[in-house]
Image (cartoon, rainbow, N blue to C red; front, top):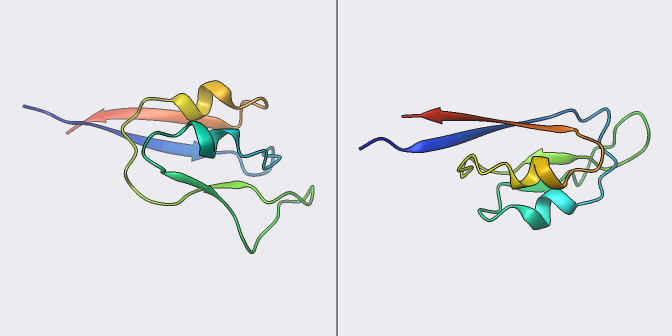
Length: 74
């Protein structure tokens, strides 16, 4: 039996740090940076752990299309 895992890629330069992706993630994989900001001055979304299941909920709710999710079968 194989398992699906996800990889989240965030375009931190475009991210406004709204946090919608953080709230949409069922596995609490994402968080907001606490000590860095992007060139626009926003605390951006970051991958906080490797628990991603590849559901892409974060990418669906992102208003600026900053998130891509890739699914891999292991």
